[in-house]
Amino acid sequence: MPLPPLLLFDLEGVFTPEIWINVAERSGLPELRITTRDEPDYDKLMRYRIAILERHGITLADIQEVIGGMGLLPGARAFLDWARSQAPVILLSDTFYEFAAPLMAQLGQPTLFCNTLEVDDRGRVSGYRLRIRDGKHAATQALKALNFRTLAAGDSYNDTTMLAAADHGILFRPPANVIADFPQFPVAWEYAEIKAILTNLLAST
Image 1: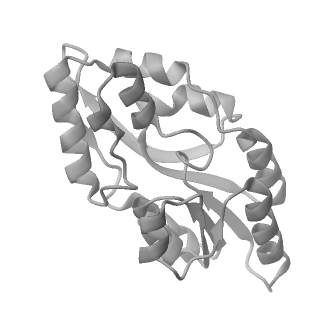
Image 2: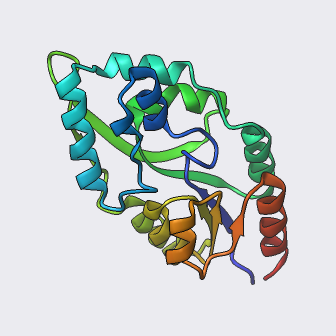
């Protein structure tokens, strides 16, 4: 008997713009534009970001104000609604619940596994807590162990362990460096393309 399918997606770059890039543009701090597309070491990247926020006095409330004004990527909600009509969906993200809440409301409250921020008494981000190290990979492995057939999609370096652990991994709108480093994954550039790939995979046993 075929295993039941489960769709796993990254959040930023697949359904929403990159949060930190929007913060960089609104704050006038271009150094915050660096994301996991550029720096695969997530802890190094977060320590770098937190240091910049501290140096410039940017609070969590400032960041949440930016996120509150963000929209979804064009076509994202329709694609997610389609995906949820095909199989259960879980979003696996390295973002934080404190950031994601308004975006989840726009997406219709899908299931999200992500992380938690530490905030000091000044309202500034002072650290972060991972649910588990390399959470996307760990979640994918655990869901496979529950006898789901996992189909995963993401855009960045920090998605590649999820894609490798899944039964089928797809890169969605990745930068050229990620494509070059991970040529084994098929690439989709538009929602119609990834829908076609997923439709074929879901139809196969």
